[in-house]
Length: 306
Image 1 (cartoon, rainbow, N blue to C red):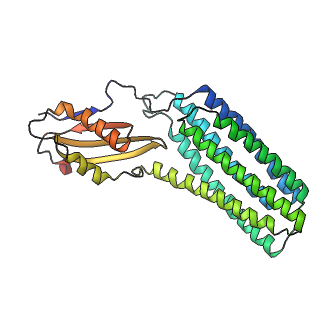
Image 2 (image 1 turned 180 degrees about the horizontal axis):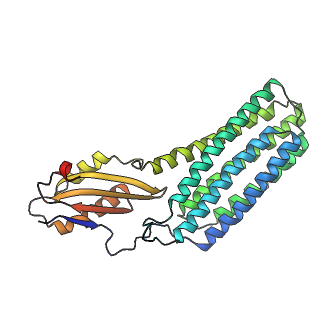
């Protein structure tokens, strides 16, 4: 039997982008413009009122505006065809942008915490009235954004992620309103730096998640929930397969998984059936989008071949 290699998606299109609906992209664009615009307003309002909490929440909204922008990039990238030099297209542009976004936000969090510590030790005046007005406007912007995104196409993971980010912003606005009212009623300005640290915790959580997940993709780590050695052992248990090895799986983007594997057929098995069989099994078991299967003759020593 001669050595054969088969792309398990033979006869299918090799575009790995997700389906894009014009309505969802339009919704995302509207919410991004309003979120980014309000983040600037909030930063200016925080500087004018002396509220570190508003500046911190502005950082949170910047992180979410960046997430919305990355989602929009994903939509646009999904429409770009592959070419002879970029056979997987431009999907990882989004990953690089996410890494840069996450790293810059971690620096912002460090500054917010440093400034908050200084204000706890030496409290500063906070204009609670302007703080309350800016936070209330933010709440309305986020309520509108959540409503717009909730009307999008169901099953769109891109849109769902953006919706969750907006909900996080909404909670930050509620916290800023509560702090402003608390300062107005009690005069206790320490509420402002305390809230800024809580908001910074929200930012660092999303920022670290961006950095961690981006690095996993760029390092071509096995997707979460998938054990390469276990997958090989399970494939070898199939009646049609004598041996399976050199299983590799990596994430092309955050929602597309690619894998390759070598197998040898069991005695009496037609090797031509293995690529489709292995591909179908891996897709069903591990939700892998694109599988390349290489069928090797019985007795092949893989350690010498690779």
